[in-house]
Image (cartoon, rainbow over the protein chains, first blue to last red):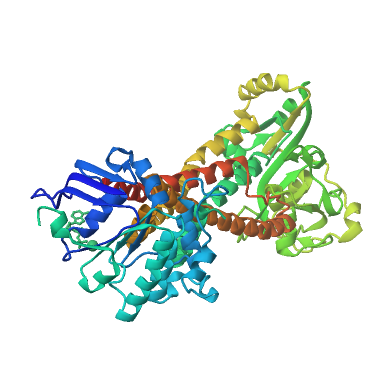
Length: 222
Length: 418
Ligand SMILES: Nc1ncnc2c1ncn2[C@@H]1O[C@H](COP(=O)(O)OP(=O)(O)O)[C@@H](O)[C@H]1O
Ligand SMILES: [Mg+2]
């Protein structure tokens, strides 16, 4: 599913030792991996490498058996749209679009969107995620944070990606919403047998995942 | 609506405060640009059609612009008169079909009086060979009959039968009134949109008779108004001199030959001009003015477009998260570039629609008034091939300015790739 080999990554204009230095790191299909580390340790950077938003200067990054580091930027953008669902802590949605439009926006970037699209319907997903129909046409900025995060899950799932990437998606939620968020997400992933890489600094969530790792164990520099 | 378009539209609506401001700025620029262009073209057309069908205008030797100004536009004053003999000699030339003598120098309440003959009404034409026509009454017959231009009658509230007193000189407050010799209005001309509207037309012999009588004479019998004017004996004396005359020739081909002959007329210094050439020269002199108008509209456009650029540039800062999200969803950098450009184009188009509607509406209102009051036909459609060019220019300028924020977004998206 995911295979990193001898990856070194340094942010541009940061010439000190590499932020990430990963000899080997694999995730197999259907696994849900929890990666924890303090803030600023490079968790988001790692996820950006997996999604092809960032590319490393050294090493190999394979996702779904495809070498991201050998793709053109256009290919990486298309790969991301088709195969990766993303959920962040905040700013998951375009605030002035409603829930359905936000989901349709993600659909519009999928190749072959239209008749032969493999993507699901926004309505089905929103219903599955307990967003009542009266909320569908509101600008998402007017929804509660909990609702927004659920719309974000629907948005991430609509193109039926093989890999779900979650960057501290629960950090802005209270404890109750945090648990209901994970209780909603995990069964959906299992049903579609998607892989999940979930990063957070909050170790208390670890029990939801099939595998738990510290970033400092993955990346040799920490 | 395709997602790309919907995203742009909703994003603009979400920032409607600042977007509306730059939209208004664009529509004001469009209004000014098209409005000025429209007025410029209309002015040129109506200017060029002030006189038509006249082959030569002859006056005492002066500048050709001066001759045109006083003989056609009733502006300025002649330097000298020409003798009746010279007029007789030239107008009896075999190549001359008709002639219109003109005598200037008197006025009525600020409107110039032109002494002439019937041939003025018969031969003078304006626009596309349109002849003068009467709105009411008849042409002058008696010595003290007057035919008013449309504007004179309208603004002074005169009707046929009105008695008017002419003043010597052209100032509105001339003290030398020819009170003993009032004229009677016998006809009012239809509006032409030319200086004819602002003129009082009287027979040449009327001018002679009026001046011959001299200053205020007590006991001078007033002219009986109405039909009685016809009974007035017509002065038989020919004027000693006139101010200028217009000539129509049998053949255009003889124009230059006759012009040369007149310009070298042995006994008097005369000048003959071709009205079309002199009009074009005069318009050329006003070309400076045209260019200033153009410069002003260009600057208004620049300001509006820079405003749009500033709004878009500010927006990409506040939309950082949005832009990042689009990248995560798989939007390539050029998508972001085109999104910003599309937004600029939408604002620009909305501004064009608003500006053009406002201008067309304004022109329809103005056109009504101009036509009824001055007989001036203003084309109410603001859309000419020229204005399509202007709109394209505005859209191009907007796209060019928007390329700055658009390129910034594009290059920031590219930057993250090594
Ligand atoms: N685009 C960037 N350019 C330069 N430095 C960056 C950039 N993004 C992140 N960093 C730096 O890299 C380090 C790791 O950041 P990040 O991966 O966001 O950590 P985490 O997600 O674990 O909090 C931080 O020191 C951060 O300042
Ligand atoms: Mg982070």
